[in-house]
Image (cartoon, rainbow, N blue to C red; front, top):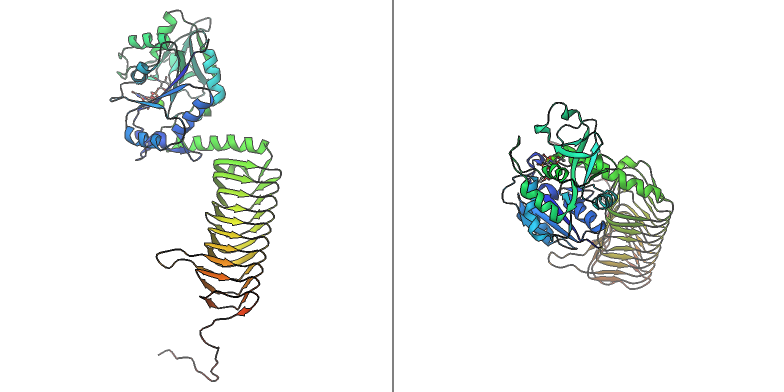
Length: 458
Ligand code: UD1
Ligand code: CA
């Protein structure tokens, strides 16, 4: 029997406590909107269809969904937020009787595929819930069990007696139930309670009365099922997410100087003996081959670095590809389209953009190289600038193998520097330069005026 799995993801609430213009479920954890985490986890758990219940800021969430890659969930609008049962009901017309419904939340981002799997399996016989036991259960619905330990109902904090409030096993909100039964139970849920809302949790009491088996699954940790309602909880979710992925990477053999001072907002693929010092932020897709070392306070976004390369402190690499055994930084900046060969040295305050640099070439200090193709074993001196932009268009600079570009030279593109060319320091080069020759262009020969007096202050 293959029962289709339909997830109903609640995301209609206002999120007032976030105090933000951004809809709550679009706030990122690990660089990815919370809602994306939930959708990805649902997909990983083999959900066949997802239904997203939207309300407040539905337009902005819909816009985000439209530009997102991957399977788009169906959305339904809950015009007024009359409670969690009412929210689930909005999606039920789209769910066939034979399906299993899994209720998820757009603001509970860290639920794991393993817990979701366990929930789905536990719903085999009837209704299943994810619960967790907390030292401080305040605010949560409490799980009521009979003498034999069978779940009888859930009572919300505001409706609970003082004795019931002593119960520490709480409802996480995550639930799975067969669609046909859930539909019937939902039709019997009323709103005569402290909040005057239609509570999804009432379904549990109705199921117990029907003699349906109610199983519970324990969340692996409280972090996993914690909802995000304000910036404090968002930051807590972020830390716990970072801790999780860092541990996984360490087990894969990543050497982090301090796991609590490393942030990954995307994916990281590593070889053997990769070391990362403190304070680094990695974004997008980062790939580091064997023995790559990243110094402290570096930012890497969409970067590939080949084996043996060292990136020193405070370097920013974005959209770059770096070859083997290079030395980058400290304080280097590689911008999109920087493609470095092997054994390249890029030193402090050097910016490289949309430029290919051949094996063994060096730019060790204070330079801008953009829209260029640089050959092998080229030496780019301090203060060299490729003047690539004329105010309207970008132009290319081509530098042949073994060229030497003297310090403080400007190369006015479009321009080609021949192989083995030697450009004297301080030259402004506006015409193509032949191979193997010394080229010099300074405003005027240097003159000195002996006996000259400095102006005096009046
Ligand atoms: C709910 C549970 C409670 C559980 C807690 C876990 C109910 C009645 N109670 O309480 O047992 O311990 O979650 O965090 O379900 N939402 C809608 N439409 C609505 C109402 C809510 O989409 O009409 C969404 C909210 O955006 C939110 C989620 O459902 O993401 C939970 O709603 P909320 O009002 O926060 O429920 P709690 O009172 O926290
Ligand atoms: Ca809540």
